[in-house]
Length: 376
Image 1: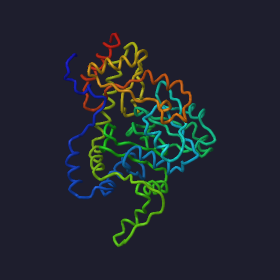
Image 2: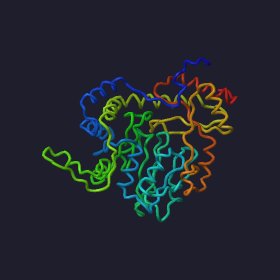
Image 3: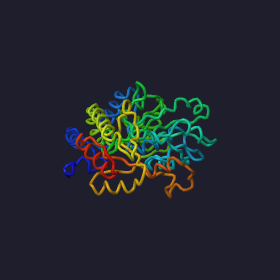
């Protein structure tokens, strides 16, 4: 297994296209209308049907979704948002964008997600929202502390960038009643090239999100055929999803069952190939219910050396993510998070995308075993 033909293993993640995206994109281009159009609304309706929810709000990116969702939840200056340090920095930037402060929370070493205990320990009188990050596609269930959150008017804004299609019991993520945000970036389970989606909790919240994504313009006034002007009724952003991105998303959505099957099979192949390998622990994503976005392992000794050695062997490993509470931009909110600080030295992600084959998984597992000096 020393061949360099394993092109699936030389990159940590790659977009996957099903073949119809190009034609859909060309059709959208030839229409001459590239903003929020009927194509965008068809994509919104398709996602709503898939999830079993009444309304969805398409936006320009997953980060925009978090920003707008926090605003719609009433989060602003003087408030704190509980957010795991172990996440992509976009989660934290969305908190800062609304004028709030991040209060960094530790995660479980088993799931790399926050849990009810860490949330309860971190709540302060200024807490206005908690942002569970569904790392790797795994659901975060905070239902047992929901009475406490409701008592203190603390909103749950789910960062489900990794978790489109995952299930919480019989329902998909996004249909469980939380204010949920998805990312449809280049390497997500479903890609639009770039884009995001908000799943609002109420019709009023949906209307608020729509106004916020469209520069505060009241859309009904814009769309009247006889209108000579438009009405701006509050603050807003330019964060609509382009019809070009929505056209890609519609094709991806039509093939999502393929993504679900392939991603689950790929993760299970890794779990089997790595079973019994000394020196690592595979991070559980609850593959029965989750659609995995990545495959993470904890390397118990010399992670950085293992990482470099695998890169030298052209295995596209990554590190998701550098803890945010240790970033210089977030120094004012630094606090001790012992689990996250240990994970910073241990977590490594293996190549994981739908171009990969079972042979690629075996190739990665073999290289990892060689580097660790272990046996399989």
